[in-house]
Length: 283
Image (cartoon, rainbow, N blue to C red; front, side):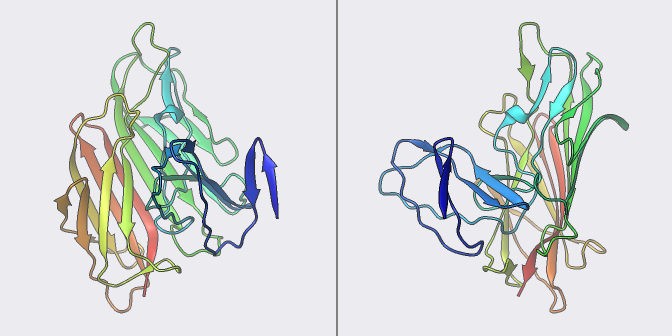
């Protein structure tokens, strides 16, 4: 079945399948894939080179909050911070994902100044708007927590992502200011069932979005791995190669899943801490 909406063509296909699309080179394209009443994911605008071939996977591990643009988190001239954080992007290619049509998911977003809660949102009201904030530059923590224990899928049953940044009153004449939130991407070789080898390599990439206005070099990345849903942790030794930090897991024979806990910090002091329960499976 196929149809169109706003000039875009939608085609109904099995959730586990392969699909090939041909697009015009030099034109910017975006892809939006939806599991009705469960989840949708999308890409940023992308222009492809002539005769090039790209492969994308959808709805697989590792799912966690992932932004494609800085525009969904901003401070305006009214001394308040607003934020919308989609909680269910998968890894490999930059995908942003949400679960607005699912009743089996719990998504919360909270903003703290120090330990004081100054803004909150949930799955029924996903856009967060803080109360009026101090004009002084102060440290803030933006915390995204997402759970989907009732879903049939076994992975990313719970995630917690905390971004740290400093914010004060924006300069006169400026419409808004966007914090430079560090994004975390994960690359691991998994099969169609979302499972990796017990000695698989994991590459963590910590990055700023291209539109970040106050981005600086990533200075530090850490990774801890758990094989018992976070009861005990193993610190991973990372090797920095190019833009990524790489390690190899050593999962016991009794383990069925890998849980991840990652931190990153840049030269300006912006930070992120992310934990993903059952990020992917083991075979």
